[in-house]
Length: 173
Length: 265
Image 1: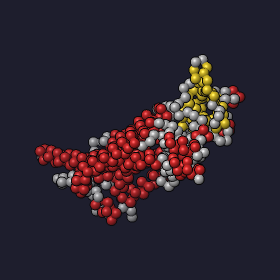
Image 2 (image 1 turned 30 degrees about the horizontal axis):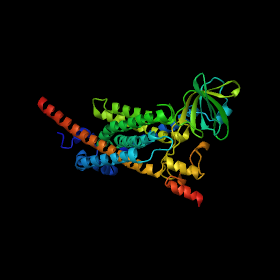
Image 3 (image 1 turned 135 degrees about the horizontal axis):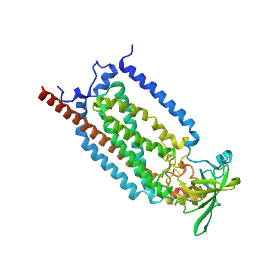
Image 4 (image 1 turned 30 degrees about the vertical axis):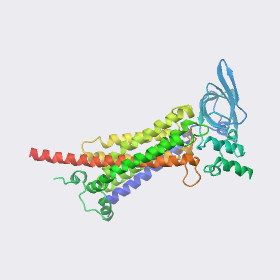
């Protein structure tokens, strides 16, 4: 015979299992719509129809950024890559401060007919998880360990507690 | 006649405590809680203030800024600790809810009631500071990605809990109903933590790792750790202070009720 407390405890455990599995099933079911953006590879697989607005995310591919003006507005073309595929993007407007080559971005817009290019009306910069002082970034760059242009920072263990001088000296030694 | 501790008001238990119950109920006595907490509280509050200010001053004025974010990176000394306290504050609320539902723990009821507003404050601080960081760095105050949305839901859970626990004339009904909400809402906590790994989000992944190397440079990590300790101490001081005054409030109410009964008879 269970006491009232034990009965309540088992009831709470049973409800807990029920609620968590219901939530898990719901999250799995809505998996695709819970993702904030599609990667270039997913775009090639899923083929969103031209004109359908979606978010395209990835890294700004090195040496593909071309900036100019059109009708007195800043005009930028670049490619977004996820390492497997890359998609050309056209954007008219002011870019966020963090925009640069090798930076993660999320753009909102639609593909043109024939999957030629992605016309973005918004560009958001996606910041990485690393926090690094300017002198450490310079030291890594000088030591040839990281060029921000080619993607995210190297393994944190190689820099997160090293002085800029050590980073450069490691390279020479 | 309510005793000094106000037990007759908050304890509806009519059966002898079991073995586990006896252990739990040692800590359920509001009078003992007051004797333990009240002498410590001023020192805890002062210590929390000093540690938080140390962490924030170090972070804002002495730690280096991030190479590409510039001065806005310093918002993390408020944002990251606030986010941690918001989530662990809810975990504390959920544990109080469990103690309340299963063991009818009278102190847990008061604790759940008083932790709510403090946790909601830290959640709001996390959302506001994150949003102020997002404008210059991402290019937007707000996006509906999984991390931001699940933290907004956390704020609504706190606000819903605050409203529900105070919504009944009989406080016991409020405690029971709010405890169910508190436990069901706990399912949101793993979603917040893992959202940045389960789905593509605009929000970055975790910078701090307990098992591996952290992605924060060491001279930025120290002030972050100090301000985190400060935020936790501040959360503890505010919650304990509110619980303490919550107990006093119940005691005063039960004394007034007893007086009214005597007067009416």
